[in-house]
Length: 282
Length: 294
Image (cartoon, helix red, strand yellow):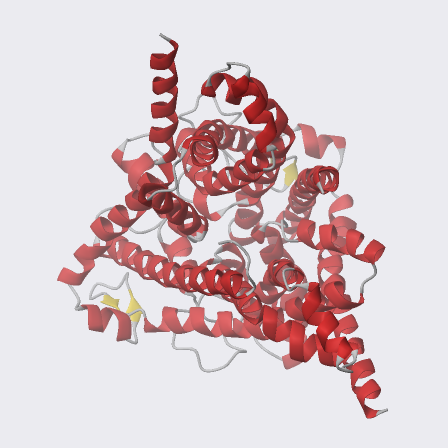
């Protein structure tokens, strides 16, 4: 009898844990949606800031985030995919491969602000790219690299060995097999990884603090060497700089809602695809 | 002809595969190169255990103990929130949630894990700060407690997701054996499944901690930023990551302050590296123990 009372209390506690977690996270989404929605308008999404950041919209920040994310993926995808192909398709189990695996795991654990300092020292100062889209994209790309590698690896490993063997037995070369058989089969998984990285990269702030971001730029970025406004940095700057805290807070709500909506949408899509894919494979 | 082409492709992939290693080594070299010069001005002992951080004074002092303690305080506070909530939620998902409920809740939690840190920081500033200020009658609600709270909530989905993975690796036969000797579900869960998944759960907690220590934007925005020795959770602190992010913009390139901030980043990097290696070792043992392939 006592046994079951303990069990009921225990289960109740577990239930409370997940309820509290969902309430906390739900309230973040609720507050930001409710207060951000008041600010969002057609003007907010399609115009630049006016009147010392107190009016107008945030289009330059949206565009900046788009460029930075695009640049990061263009940089990280070829590197990450090649690495995954080598590890899954070519690599003999060896000392070297182990080292590569360990370095991927550790790169994934590096704090984001450390990537920022690396970008500052290497891309901004050493290569003299300055505070620019290019520096920011490279920095964010390195951050996204481990994500893309592990997602691509998972996708490549899910391709049945028998398909590869069938292709090889028909006289196809190793590269031919990878290009025509393995990659097309693994494509949905690889895309999922790319989409998840987009969600992560778009919301990162610390790596672009000193490598790409500016609170205000006149007009839109002209080349890959211009500094840009970016949504996540814009939220931070609106809350900590400037001279009109109340009006800026309202704009920050709007920016947070846009960012939250974009990131949740993107990762929601990726996780839905992955869920379906795993369902099919299982 | 084709064999040459094949070899070229193989070499291209092999070369590019080293990119992660190159970047990791690059980060280590940069941190050492830019961080070490500070130790010509202060000894490593004084740097780490010095109690005053006044990098911009005309007689600057570079003691980062207040920053280290700031990080430790905020992270420990966060653990008190994310471990019970994260592991509790994982146990709920594993043991109590039905198949359908689980299929909905697990992806929701994974999606919530992707909320950007700057959004958490913003939420902390506009909602939690006034709340804490009123509740404790403080001059400011930006304090260590606020940082711990937000960081804890932020790490919960990650801990939950990883812990749930660990629980799902425990073989069904363990549970069945436990039921067969008359244990109920709670006893089975706490005395058989949890110990079996224990090192997997430990890995989840360590990875959560590692993430919390390295987290920048949230602590930068909500901990108040005072680089003093912490005395209470209700006072402002400045963790290491916040110091780097807040001060790097003003530090003249190549000056002592600049080098000191890189040295802090070096310490931060080494700490998270150690955490990740410990997590890796524990999770490898866990897999061997449960007979899973490494």
